[in-house]
Length: 157
Image (cartoon, rainbow, N blue to C red; front, side, top):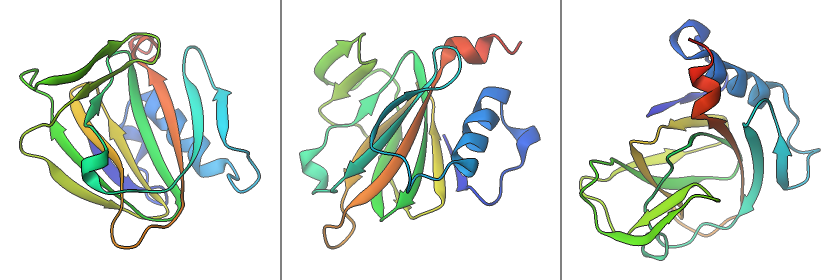
């Protein structure tokens, strides 16, 4: 997992596909873009999400197998829970290949991230994450997720 701020990207520290995703996030005016799904490059794509965070217990930890999540907070604040997926967690919902998502009932050793506008996080397949947990009061957030295909990363080598 990587956590940072969009205003401070050191490009030579990240794979090219991640840098391309961060550049897209930095250069796009998300106030002018409707929520929805947009193609990017190769198999990668973008999801613009308008969410209302809710209590942590209403969300299940999730992992992805074919995509890396590059999540960016454009507006609002979200608390996320993250942990390493060691493959020993109880599965709540089996892997859905079409959506590239698997849900666990819970994961051990979760850590919290408080995500504010301008923050980004990169979640690899080994990073379990629980999204849209509210921090204090419930407020709307606008989050953008670039789904970087593992295949696009492998093409760099």
